[in-house]
Image 1 (cartoon, one colour):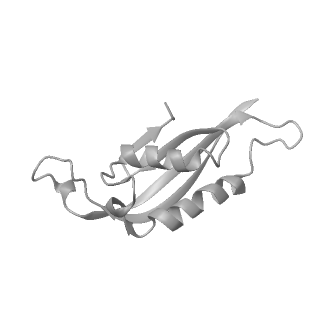
Image 2: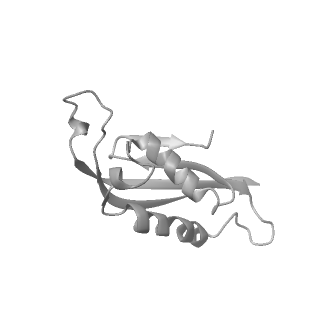
Length: 121
């Protein structure tokens, strides 16, 4: 049986978008309570009855969020000089894919109503 598991995480960070048109509100430094969903996909192991332990997902994701993104200005993080949701999705994918076999999607919720999903394409 093929399934997808998703686990949600959050972090607080500031950013500004340097490539937006002059006068755009996102050119100013501002902050977000980012919510991240990490999705893995694959076949359920017949013996364990699961795809992967949710704790294994947490063990891969939390050090990246806590150590590199939480309570930081994202523009100061190497690779996030233009920290749009799209760029952040790709950045997280590159960090997490080697640690999470079966990584299927990264979703970045920048606000309650706005999100971006990257599937490694």
